[in-house]
Length: 69
Image (tube, rainbow, N blue to C red):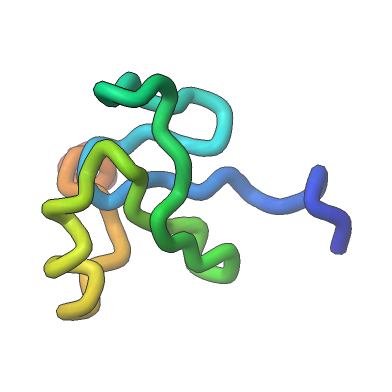
C-alpha cells in the first residue's frame, strides 16, 4: 500500500491528525510515535501522552467520547 493510501492517524493526546497538526512552541507538531496499522500515535505537542501510549492507550479520549454518542 502506498503512503497516500494510508488511513489518517490521530494523536491519542490531542486528537490532531496527519492532515491537521497542532501548534507547538517549535512550530507544527510531528509524530513522536505512530502505529499505522492502528492509525494512532503521539504527536510532539503531547509528550505527556507517551506514558499512556506505553500502557496501551491507542485512542484519543475525544475520539472515544464521539464514538459513544
